[in-house]
Structure formats: C-alpha cells, structure tokens
Length: 181
Image 1 (cartoon, rainbow, N blue to C red):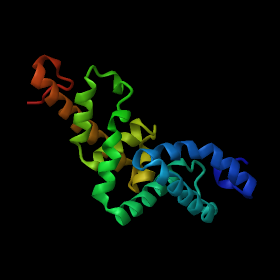
Image 2: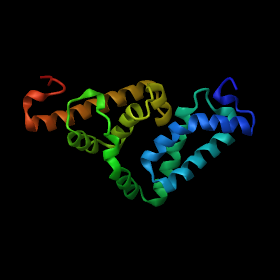
Image 3: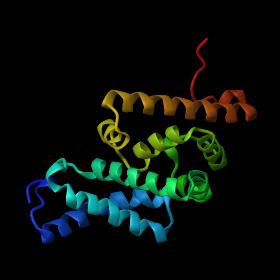
Image 4: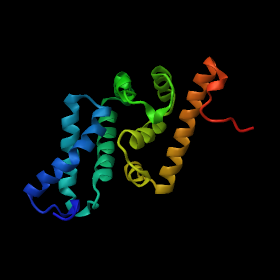
C-alpha cells in the first residue's frame, strides 16, 4: 500500500487501522471514558471505511477531525456540560510533562489551562499533546491553515498571560512574557 488512501481490501484496512488508530485513540481518550472510547473509535473508522475514496494521504488529521465530530454528537446527546466536567476530572494527567521547559509549578499550569476557553484548550492540546502542525490543526478544526496558526498563537499568548498573572502574584521578577506598554 503506497499511501493511506489506497486501502483496497479488508486486510489492508486492518493494517492501516493498526498504523493510524493509536493517535486517534489518544485524542479520543482525552475526552471520554474507556467505556465510550471504543464506541467512538468504531464510529470514526466506520465513517473512514465508507469514505475510503475521499481519504487524504495523511489521514490522521482527517480521522481526528471525524473523531471530534463524533464526540460532539455524543456530547449533545448526553449534555455538553456534564461531559466537559468529566473530561477535566483527570486534568492532572495532561500536565505530567514539563510544558516547554517553563519553570512553572504544576498547579499554576493546570489553573492557567483550566481558565482558558474550551477552544483555546483544544487548539493547545492538538498542538502540544497530539503533535499536529498548523495544517493538521486546520483539518481537525475545519478552518484554514492561517486561521489555525492564528488560533494557536492567540491561545499560547492567553496561556502565557494567565501564567504571568499567576507568577506575578508570587514575584513580579518571574515574568514569562514582557509587558508591552
């Protein structure tokens, strides 16, 4: 199989699934429980199976975008607020690594992230957690690459601002981003 969109039969689809599913599973797992995760993944790959001819060569952003839509439908069915609250119950897992080498206490980072809008949180996680570049983020969010870059830049700036505010409470000497007068 030369490209991911050249899936011709069930055996090739299974091999393609084995290559692509870990990244899609990682995305979906952040937003739902283990019980629901398999159902979402199954629905994502059912959609992929029915649209084999339309799949791009690098299908991971497309698959994550499809997973995002499946999750949105699920949230609407269950009540969006309840699902989002459950999503952030395990927020400590998201900050296990030192983000970008910043010398910030974990609680400050978690607090800063939780104060951002859901859109800012999502674009930051798509870049930092899923490792997607601007074109991948654009495919997931259904926007242009330029818009994805802008959203990511603005989300990073808002996160830095939240972190600066937290650090200022302790010491104004620990600023991450200089203030512009």
